[in-house]
Each structure stands twice: as C-alpha cells, then as structure tokens.
Image (cartoon, rainbow, N blue to C red; front, side, top):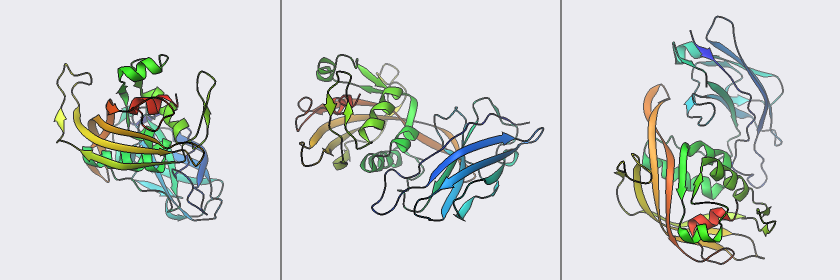
Length: 302
C-alpha cells in the first residue's frame, strides 16, 4: 500500500519573461489519494497570458519538497503537450505502477506547465551536467531552479574578508540563506539590506569564464565539506546593474562540492547530483566596487 501525503503548489515555469512572452502560471493545485488505492487525483488551474498551449507534467518529491527530481510517469488526463490553459484541469497518477509499495510521509506532488519558451535544463546525472545547469540558472536568474539544485545540507564557506565586512552573516551561508539571497539577487529589483541601505538590483548575470581546473575528487572525512565530490573552477562572473551603477565582477577560484543519490528518471534508476557546497577562494575588493569576493557578492543581497 502506498501512503502519500501531498502538498499544494503553484509554479512559474520560466526563469524570467522572454521579450513579448510571459510564462504560464499554475495555481490552486490540490492532490488527493483515493481511499485504499495508489491513485492520486490532482486538480489545478493554468493561466498563460499569451494564450499558448502548454506541456503539463507532474513531478514528486520524496523529501518534503526539498528536491523535485522524480517525474510521475503513469499519468492520464490533462497532461503532456497541447494542453489548453484553463481552470479545473485534472490528472490522475497511478503511483502504484511507478513506485509499488512505497511508503513515505514526505511524499509531495508538483505540477509543471511549459509553454516552450523556458530554458531547458538537463537531468543532472553527472557533476559536469550539474555545473552546466548551475551556469544556465545563474544566467537566466532562475531562483526556482536554483532551489532545485541545492542539497539540504548545502554550505558556502566565506572568506575572512567577507566575514569582517558583513559580521551579521557569520562564517557560512546555509541553504535557507542561499535561497533568500538568490530570491533577492535574481529578482532584478533593488532591495534593502539589514542596515536599511538600498542595494541596486542586478539586471543581467553572465559567466565570461567558468572552467574546471581539475577532475572531480572525493573529499576526505576531515574536509570542511566531507565525503562529497569536489573540483576547483576558474571563474569570472559579471553582475550588470544597469547604466546608473557599476558592473560587479567576481573572479578567481571557487571550489564546488556535489553529492548524488538514486533517482528514477524516464523509467531508469540514475544518479541525481545536487550542489552541497562552495568554498570561496576568489579575489577582489568590497561592496559596491567593480571587483569583489564571491561571498561578498552574495552577502550584499542577504
């Protein structure tokens, strides 16, 4: 018997609007398990301002919504390509076929709608693919997808210069701090920092250099981020803040740490990689100057 606990979710699928096009919006998602069965009935509304037909898919999480890497395969109803956005759409997922005898109190369901104008990310079945997704997510400023690649135990290890400049931040950034920072950073809007100072919004992010300096290694138990795969990257990131403010630049080395777990993808069991850590080894100045540390670039948007 499958016991499934579902959450309600409304999602914007695109990282940001393409000129002349707006992403579809999914709202009012309700998922209910039929008594004494493994069938999950899902209802939802989809709105697309441009009137585009959308591709609808259902995904589920086994960790309470921390990650959404498992697609519901045995699904019928208003799913797949060519779905006309409207209220009262329905789908039924036969979870018993996809995951027989699975019991998990953290089981959750999410509905995705794609009008074909969003950026497609590859399944992160290797560290290299995950890093390519990381670049795409940054350059499209997609906070939703950024959350999907983060491991719950993620940490950014800050340099002492960042700690000194932003004493309220501490020595690390955990996953919740990362998500708040990137919601603000990727919004494109000016924000206010904890001191009440206005922080200009970033309108565009580009990776002018993002090169692995070595192969991936396994970190030892005594490492600051132990028992994970890591590789150093030579980076140059540019944060454009419009004509009124200078462009911020981060350059130098960042050690990226990743970890993986089993995941069902297109009917096959594969490794699903997430980012579990970053160690800032970049060089630069402080806040509001052209060159700054990687950790400082994040801390500005805390």
